[in-house]
Length: 458
Image (tube, rainbow, N blue to C red; front, side, top):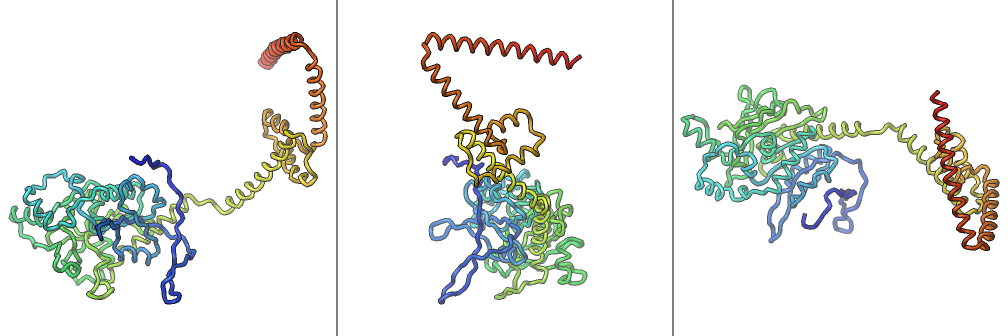
């Protein structure tokens, strides 16, 4: 990157959540400690407000995630974030929702048949959606593939369902009106034309979808289905949709024009076991009665409830996989405490050895730990034992050890005094003599070792 940022350096994070109260007629946020909740990643959408970019996420998504027992972690739509997804670990779930159209080059392996004039018309009609955001595409496709690889719970709403389908090899209609409805008319098929985007009645618009039996969607809305009809009315905010559903998915609902309005992976759906891979083209979190927070159907929030259930179960599975038994943790703490005591004992002994100073009486008990360790440690190698002794680790006999050190020091002083009076020729001869003795000693030692090896072999 241009700023030479080291992407491998992941900084530690401390998240502190404030609590709001009223003091002296004004809001005050204060910090409270609470249970760490499972984390659900949700990618923001970027818009321009007051001549600057603003990232936002619909409040209903956040409210429902929190209300069912998870914490939403917003992934900002910022350049380069798609390369930093590991920094958002641990990831216990992902919700992807609204946004601009996906870049057609990510899925368009089939000819759409749209003319340049038709594409221009689509851009004019849906100006806010057709401005492709490749950075958001990269972030969300990266998260979707991560969920599929690790079986992390995934809930895709509207665009999020399209991202999921494309991530698994499916394709999209670039425009339902121009492709799906036009193709059916040209082929002579008679099907009900469905309005999937009504700007004049944005939140109030609904159209019917047929729910497929024995699917999660059927379980959630079964009490609201009319006998023999299997239909619910859903909201609709999209001009694109699933064209070819990826092979791994099973449809859960269809619009009257045949468009897939919901799908899931039956092999990756068991919320109690932490499994949840699903896409919904409609927005159940926004299906509410006019001027009210009441849902159109009791089953509307079920997708979020079951998703968070899977998130919690997935988090628990992860924790169980890496959790250390309490007894082991306690043992490790005790061993670490003993290790520090022994290290301190060796440090004192080493200081005694290097300085030649006798340890104060107050340090005697601390020296005992090192001595006891040496006595009980029968697995030390000859080299380790020699090194520890050199460091003065045989501290139980520290007094005699120090006496020997003093004797060596006195001999060294005497030797230095004598050598200081010797001539250069005498010193040169002395060096040559010890060099020769060293060579002879090495040869004799090598010969004796060879004889020992031969004797053992026989």
